[in-house]
Image 1: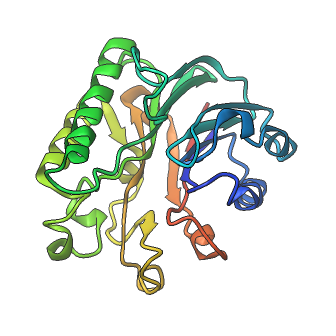
Image 2: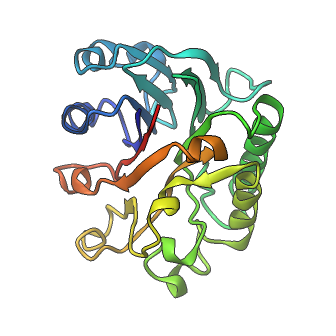
Length: 258
């Protein structure tokens, strides 16, 4: 089973990118973040024509939004945290495929260190850990993927000195991120690749960032230990980042013997 995650930064703006890439790489399951559209306008028919017979989505106008597209039936769908109000940001969706609980998440950005939105980010990640504590078992097949807006290690960013005092690499973010990981997750990409310079995000406001590979590894695929044992490969596909009007993120793909 091939699973991919991609912050597409607007499904309607980059639907052609999603279809083009999916037809070339052929993931069985594609998790999307920042779809930025209400559920009623999600392009189900066009995605079905591209091979995704099953689709679950949780979106809102102009912001956030997550989706799971699949060639495999999706069961046991959950949207958001337990107790979320209708106005809660659409950042979390879960579905089961081939016996694997797949959780697709778009972590908050945080905006500014020390701000209310920064505190919301930390609280949200802590709440996600509680979500797994209450609803899942580390001994089961569980996968968490998405845009985390956090870089866990120095090798996951292009310039440690530059990012040391900036969003995405603060001690507070990394601490709560590690607490989430200690639920029982394995960073699948690092399981098969221990090289620096592997990033998934490059700033579109600085045109040189992608050609010079000045990026961050913000997008992750994590697996429970039993699922990690079934992983045969995991990689970042930089190609779509070089297309015209791209998302600022690149897809991450993992393959499992399922």
